[in-house]
Image (cartoon, rainbow over all chains, first blue to last red):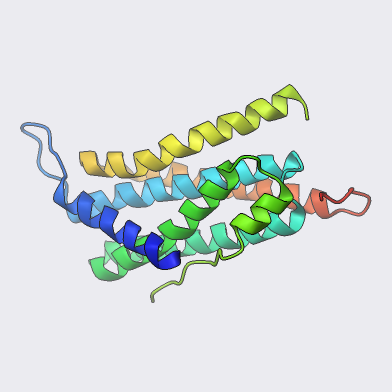
Length: 138
Length: 68
């Protein structure tokens, strides 16, 4: 499952590199500008998971133990994204893309699990059974 | 569960998917993000993460009925 998600993330990144469009008269975005946009929106996606999990916890749809697990993963995702951003700023796009790809998998899993219907403590447990924090490349 | 809570969950759920799509579409469009946009997103994450921590602490407080 994790390998499939990683492959999906890498595929999307390759797709993005190959199909950037630019308005007439506008300079094409640099790799760093494209990466900044990806980073900003990835943090927004991580933030949405945090907000959705908060609402689910307050509604009793997930419990405190599950919420702690979610927060552990969302914090690890943020660290991976920050590492990716830092690597991109110094031109290390390989490490940047690797950490971004690693971060997208857990975000995708958590989003899907929080959106699953019905969402209960039991279904969330089953859905997140194989969820692990992203690995961060130095 | 109150209608307000159900509505809040629905809004969160419906909002999550388009945001994930935007992750790809905006980067694809080549529109650069400004430094202030980056700072605003990071600031919002810290605010929401703090609210999440507070909600967890409240749920773990003695006397809070466990969720099954």
